[in-house]
Each structure stands twice: as structure tokens, then as C-alpha cells.
Length: 185
Picture 1 (cartoon, rainbow, N blue to C red):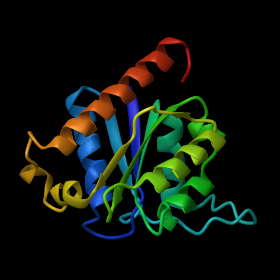
Picture 2: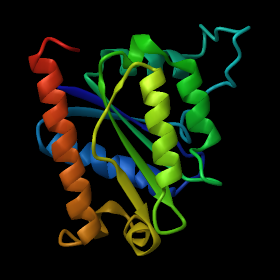
Picture 3: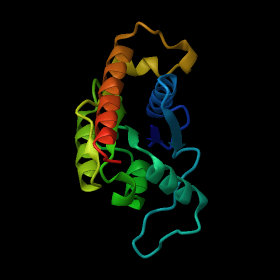
């Protein structure tokens, strides 16, 4: 199985990017081929229907990674009740060719207790991209978010937020196996 995680922040040290890195590491520990596309490290041009950006190396790599993936993880900070502009821009560049029939796990990091508004918006976008929303999602906020302000090696394995993340990952992997077993992706 192959999964690509798209880290949708344009801030260094972003908790949503660290969350995405943690998810990728956990998937790899479970034998899944998982890769990260970090929009902070490799920004994309602004989407325009008038310009294809066929020569932009980062965009070509993101499109290839997403098209070759069996499942996708979308991670974003929550800004003003929505996902980041850089993740929305990346999703505008992508389409059914990359998402069609694939399980998608949504994850957010919010300054408040939870990032529900951005998760709901991500689920609507995934439906419009013809992806399959994982019934579980991940939202870290408040005290839980502080866990991801540290470097990954400092994470406490008994932390309740990690238990919820692992539960969502199990659900995502079950969905991924189910779709693949049905001749889906």
C-alpha cells in the first residue's frame, strides 16, 4: 500500500506538519509505503485555470505522488474556521485523477480545542474530488497540540492524543484495505 500525506502549512515548525510527519512515520512502522509532500518546503504556484504550470517540478511531483498513492492524508492548520490557503491551492491543482476512489484521512491542528470547521470543509472537498472520506478524522488542539510543538522523539507514547491518532489510522488502514480488496484503487 502506498500513501501520500500532504502537509498544508506554510509555516516552519507547524504543528499540523509535525502531525503529518508523525502519521507518515506511524504508517511506515506498519509496513505502509508513506511519503510526505510538505507545502512549506516545496510551495506550489497559485492555481489559475488559464495556466497549467506543466513545467513546475513541485506540482508535477505532487500530482505524480497523489496519482500513484492508494490513499491520501490531508493535514492542515485551522485558520479562521477553515483550512490553510496553501492546502486549498494544492487541492485546486489536483482532481479526480489523483483522488478518485481513494480513501482520504483528514487531520487538523487548531489553536482552539478542536478544528471541526476545517475538517468538515476538507470532507466536502474530498467528496468533490471523488475521494472516499475516512469515517474517522484527527483534530488536535489546545493541550493536545502542545504535544506536537516538540520534536517527534519527545512524544510521550501514553498520551491520549496519540491513542486517538492511532485509532483513526487503524480506521484509515481498514478502509484502505477494504477498497483495495474490492478492486478499487
